[in-house]
Amino acid sequence: MDLLKRYKNIYDTNIVLMYKGEVTFDLVTSIIETLDGRIGEIEDNRIIKKKFYGAATECIQNLYHHMDEVSDETIDTYDSKAGLLMVTARKKFFNIMTGNFIPNEKINIIKGKLDNINSLGKEELKKLYKEILYNGEFSDRGTAGLGFVEIARKTGQKLSYEFHKVNEEYSYFTFQIRVSRLTNKELAEA
Image (cartoon, rainbow, N blue to C red; front, side):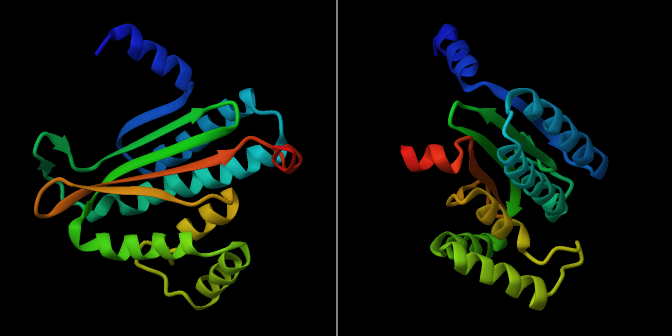
């Protein structure tokens, strides 16, 4: 591929933050603080910053909570414990993309949750959120599956995801969301 073309693509994408590696508790805190500062530099609207911050925090915590589902071995030439986070800023939206390895046995569970969330409207998401909050069983990681629901509620967007089979045991899970940079008034006028 033409190097100038790659440069233009990276330049046009406006990468706010990109990280690849092990996701630890201390790193989660550091990434969230870094994003808070970087987004504060490029976005003035307090409501949009709050939506972004909430969604980004959920995405990063999701990476952290599910890193231990993969054994300490390498997967072919990849570090199995490495997560990927990329945040970009466009004129009309922020894009948050994460990637991590997951056991193949978890795919149907995750896919079912995401498809269910994507099929719900605003009020149904609110109802599901309350139902999980009050009736959900918390895992040994302290989660009850609220993260994806909260992301959908905060962004008002469908959740985009893919699974790429790596071998018989693991797949690579990519998750992507957009946080609109347009106000409700701007959206109504569009």
